[in-house]
Length: 226
Image (cartoon, rainbow, N blue to C red; front, top):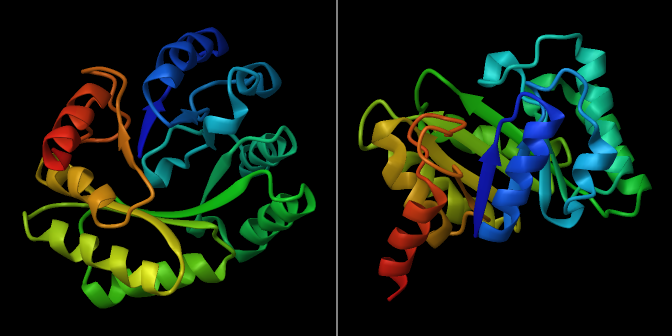
């Protein structure tokens, strides 16, 4: 499964990008961390059942620059409005993640919780990666998301190895490497058990380094499945 990630700066741009992306992929990640006042009721009306709402922290590669309370309020609003997924970083802390998990449950599980961890510097040891999966799971994740930066080609292998490990635990997971050297893992991840892989709508619109376009991703996966 492919998830197109869009990072608009305004509500108007968000509506335009959602309109273009939703017909092209099973999921669309709506990154609201650049929008000063996201109009979530209007934006989610475009296709809430296929939208992942993310309000990414700066220390994990995002743009959100206001107070943490406001950042979390917007994720709670997305749950109330019935977004398909919300993504919260494990580093947000157990109390805040737990409150969001409680909100998901109180709304009947319409929304699923992604607990994510991004390493922008590199790829740690296999033991550390396994520990991060368990930590995200312990926070109540419906889907664990682990993303690292590939500094060497073999970093892809360490990250991809956690996919079957998580599946053996019955844990849904998304995992891959960023960076030009991580492009291999973006393609291989859905073949090895990742719930989805992220792609950009077009060239120049990547939300993270090494991201393929949705057309490129479909072409490569199509060749591998043929």
